[in-house]
Length: 110
Image (cartoon, rainbow, N blue to C red; front, side, top):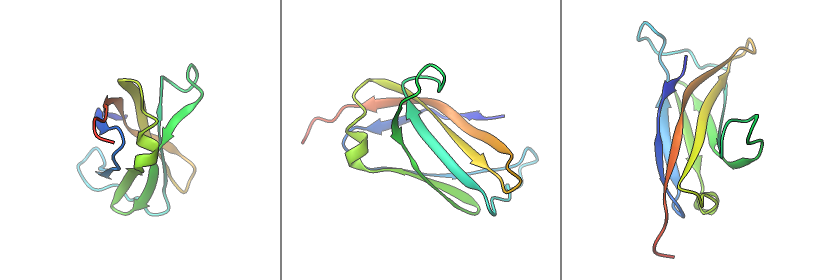
């Protein structure tokens, strides 16, 4: 089950976040061999097939590092989008660990 995590991203700035993943009993999840994917879209994938901005997602146990370059955050022109973070484990099981909205603070200085 995923946890809601709403983001605020400043348009035109680099963005970065670190995510720690835990099991239901509170112990760190073993991320060895996992891959991660995270995307920002206008809506859910079935109704909004175009990825507006992908995150660079790097798994470095015990955490996942997410980043977006400023050249990509400039593409965030609407006030709100949707995102999620999925992990794929070595046994091919896939788990969405975070999901939510992306609120965009539009840049002023260029």
